[in-house]
Image (cartoon, rainbow, N blue to C red; front, side, top):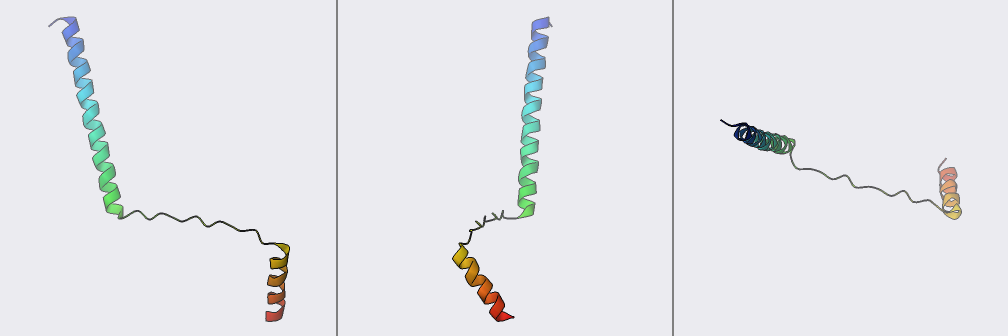
Length: 66
């Protein structure tokens, strides 16, 4: 076997090994996701800054509640 063909065989072996590793990782990831169940997205709640008038009306409600 010539040196060039040995290198070619080595590259081919590395390539197939990498493809198998990637496929195994992907299968593992998919299995993990399936086990976890459907993904639930968290909704972001925007905080709204209140105006001085609104803050004043809230303070008035608090003092009347006491």
